[in-house]
Length: 377
Image (tube, rainbow, N blue to C red; front, top):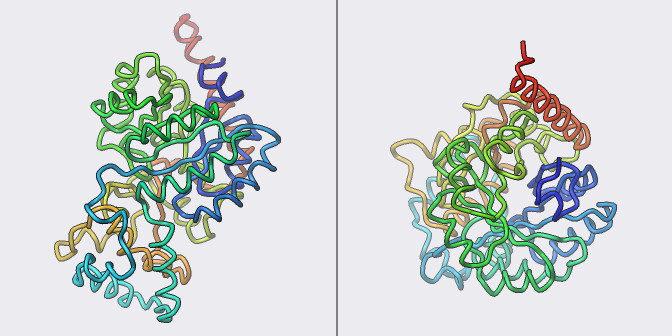
């Protein structure tokens, strides 16, 4: 079996793997899939180091890079400075965050550390078009093995698509509504990723079983990747039956030995059911899915402030997330994760996960063929 996408990227398996961890990205590509590196957690300088490392550890196999072109940022936020923060972030929202951390005795940062963290975030980590372009400037210096860039949110600018095409890179984009398809195709996108309700990160309010066939129909000859809740080989078979040419996985890799997740996060992932995640706008300002915890519960209470628009919500909670990662107050700790967590129970390495996926995919396809031929039980 080889889909068009598999041919494009010399893949042995129809599996794309999103991760913020370079080790996972490289390992998936080595195992015959296609690793995709998330970039919102690193500065452009750090990204260059990460890509250099991946270039040296994929055994010559290609991989991709994910950026974020959030649509219609609030006026003035593209050039927002540290001095602007106190003006644009409501004091009530900041106090809510501080009170929540104090309730769980999360140690405060020194004034110097807090100011440095904010300066770094405002300087190179904000989710804006300007910062996305800075990351792409780095990516385009690695054309040998980076074979695809993906817009995680929003339509990629036409000029950036043209830059990618000039380097023989494909351009993909996440879509969660059928009406968005035409905008991406008109811009020149090569691949659409149908990101359904079950997915981690930014996703749709429509389940993938319903969303993907509609995206496939609207996409015409443009290949579609099915994203959301995939952690088993039989789901890959289902995605192919829906018309997708591959699956996009993310949560699946959080429990691997190569992943960036801490022991506490893995413990929570393996203990979680598919009902133990929540989709809300309180992480970035747009709906994302993550593990439930005292942190997410607090934002759902009636007295909680409303989410600020992107990128203001991310600025608001950036230090809080850093402190939770640093000090690990167990009740508060959360992490982006999709409903696939309900199918994860123990740690494995990337190669082992890939083997299990493909073994079940093969078994499922054989079983389906037997049923169609009237040879099933």
